[in-house]
Length: 359
Image 1 (cartoon, helix red, strand yellow):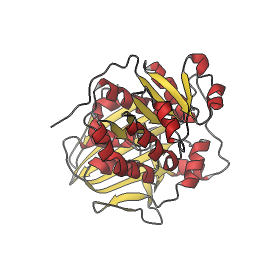
Image 2 (tube, rainbow, N blue to C red):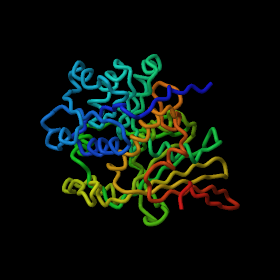
Image 3 (cartoon, one colour):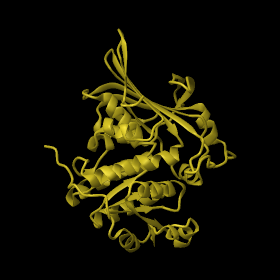
Image 4 (cartoon, rainbow, N blue to C red):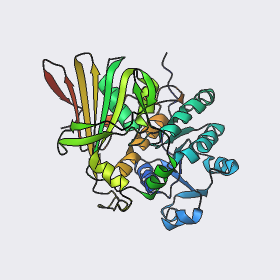
């Protein structure tokens, strides 16, 4: 039986953004405002929030720390959900998700960290179900986005022999938060091999990936992010692997690579990304590819679309869930501001292309 969360109007509903002073957090606050959802800007330092003029724009600001549960409870009071943008999530997810459940509100974050996403799923599923709320970790570019692509490609299949996710970035200028998270997140990365979560083999696998234009053929390296844990949460497959192009890997490994620079009035960088998922079942395979701009800025409409659907009652069930399990994945993707989205079904005899409601 499908259980839907109660339908509620977005008007006058508030969503707390923990880490609102950070790079991604500021994009999330702006996106909530654009959608007519009231943001509550939360950060360790209220003075830091003041630097970005939140109060001048009529946005309520509140101070809270992941080390102070009472401050989190006060900060989330009156909110319908909390979006956690404050990494490293190994340091914040447990405290913020715990506070959300105490307050009876939904929790979402944008972690790319596998250990954090896995711990959130395992720790909070039962408590979230008892509270009647959703807990959705990794609802960002790394994690939830690939899950929605894979879920759409899977379609009516309930099993895949192999799922491969390829990520191509024309550049990766990491934020300071990404740098700090990389230093903190030293755990061995996981893939699915022979149907089980397993450590990624070392040295990492390398190959060439024929992406759609504008990237075309790229040298890629196996580098799994939180999407492995998220996809495996609700999708059955023998093999599940993620690959990142070497161009992006060189940028992130170079300590002199500068942070992203705004290239438009919205503050987005000029970075271009393309994510392709290939799902194989026997001799049949399906591909889906999506292209857009700025992985950090793109996480804002992605996670805010999830919040909006939860508040509107367009989410199924409760507990700690993957987005592909609680949302209509194809409809969700069609609502995102992507510059290009294509859906291709193919087998060894013929190939057909079907645009996903896009030109």
